[in-house]
Amino acid sequence: MPSLESPQLAQARELLDRPLLDLVFEAARVHRAHHDPSRIQRSRLLSIKTGGCPENCAYCSQSAHHDAGGKQTTRLDRASVLAEARRARSEGAQRFCMGAAWRGAEDGPEFDAVLELIGAVKELGLETCATLGMLTPDQARRLRGAGLDYYNHNLDTGESHYAAVVTTRTYAERLATLEAARGAGLALCCGGIIGLGESTEQRAELLATLAAMDPPPESIPINRLVAVPGTPLGDQPPAQWDEILRVIAAARILMPRSVLRLSAGRGELSEEAQALCFLAGAGSIFVGERLLTTPGTDADDDARLLKKLGLER
Image (cartoon, rainbow, N blue to C red; front, side, top):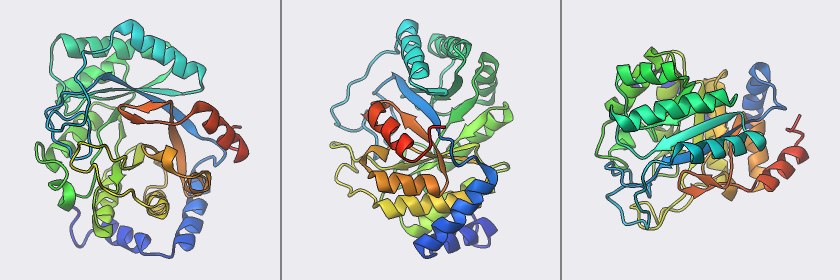
């Protein structure tokens, strides 16, 4: 957890406490100084192995600890994954992300198959991203050698709130995997979820932890909790649009060069709320009807919104 004297934590607190329009105005200025505001990077996310995860993340339908109606599946075959990757490319995605519901990647045939998939997707001309749970430094090096560009491993929330969300792994273990990925030369995709019952202070902790990384993650997903019945957070009320906007704007100012991704829960935000998030610094979205096991967005709706906002240039 960032110390009480951490300059990043002090700045995050101050930003999250600003009047919202003042915060968005400053974030938009920073965004335009470091990014092309007319561009939105698009990624597609596919679950290549769903359910049966031994972790007990309170928000996740894939946990074996919860009765959320999901069932465990075997890893998708190569042909199915590549068909989805080609579809993503044809629909305008620049990056293809593959997720497996593992506590950690285990050496052996399953991991070797994922390495092969990464190489095959890379050959299609797409950027590659994977989220496979915890990694060893050697596994991270093998992923990089296979052609992986980004490794996703979210911190979810501030460290002081973490044990209220997950108890089967520690914050330190999450950070160790991020260090292994960074040490192997992988770009990091790391962010959190808003609406887990955390306080504003704990949101500041999350942002400060990300900002203190050297360098901060290249890609930062900001997710809005999609409450899934049967999970411990299944009855959690959704975070309000202004809470998401405030976190995105603060993240933009704290981490000017990172690409901020408006991720899970985007489909439940109004067009107006999404537009404000793009103005405040969100420069990336997931496209497609599913994000692992939660609803995504309609491609035609996305195209209309981006065209309306002048973001399809």
